[in-house]
Length: 161
Length: 293
Picture 1 (cartoon, each protein chain N blue to C red):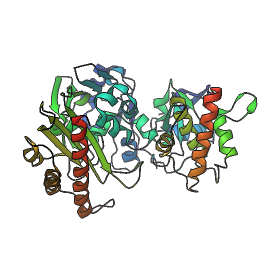
Picture 2: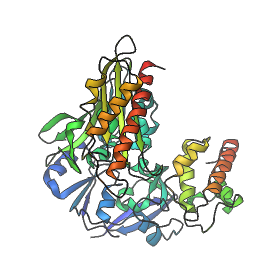
Picture 3: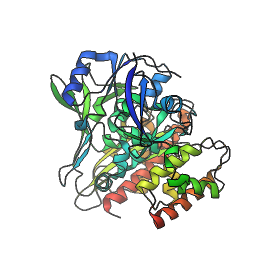
Picture 4: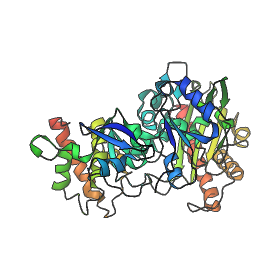
């Protein structure tokens, strides 16, 4: 039997009918119509489905939608700045050529956001360690790490949120 | 990859949770982080009829770490909280380090300490330092509470001492004694999302002279169906000052006790070799840390 629940995604309330077994990832993509969050392995290994839940990076493919009531869910679409400008992390990914096919990018960016919110001045090791749950099939890791380093600099200078 | 149909419960208190656990019994699974449970359900390895989501129960979360009184960690404390806890990093660095090496950042923000134990994977990271530290688990049911040493709680591959109607609620870590140190290490193929080939923790306590070993505990993972506490290493080292020759002897003893299997991650032969390597490194590292070097 379906239940009517409210989910706070990017500050907007979505009223959706879900089964107990529906996964957050499917609800974000199919019911909220937000296609930024990607479905990769579906087993929690690749990180393509990473979203922030109450500010923490979590895997939407292993999360029940019904368990997310009352929580703040942020997807890559939620990073957009006033006036439609890109978020500094997104801008850094563009500037550093850290996007190839782009499939891993939303997950990478959400993991980077989770890291920088907690630790705005990460070391190279911190970045590698915290992003190691995001796999890039194009293997463009070097530029991704450079982009996060660049975003961290903007972050500590301008205090972006 | 669909999940089977199940009924979802989200209790708010420990009492409500225990009532559900008691009433639904083995047809229910407790959902904490879901990073193991959901994967098993997607693979159709298990198909529980009920899920009891304990994330709304505040009593099962949190770290209480008081000076001189050890620590109590709630079963649903997320591994990331343990990894980043300044108090735990200072008092139990082996545990904080092991928690930080589980899965990936996302997994650590979801997965709980209790789940890592109750999943009872022989390759799990956190039970190894917890056993080395002498951790007890608190098991609750409607009929009361009992405590058990963690090394007696995990019994076999995916098998724990939990009876129907019971759940793990807390970990009790004893206060580290003066002049002691506990360290953890592992070997895996890559940094994240790998399953350890061998992991190990060593806890060493020194006599007041600061050099003679008073007590030692060496615990191995991934080489036995449950965390393996070495019986042969302590008699070799207690009452001795650590030397290169003793390290070699102890490492060989640990190697002899390990009973690893061949699987897709490594051969039994390779694992036995790695036990020796890790034991050598970790005994030295822990001894130096206990000496305060």
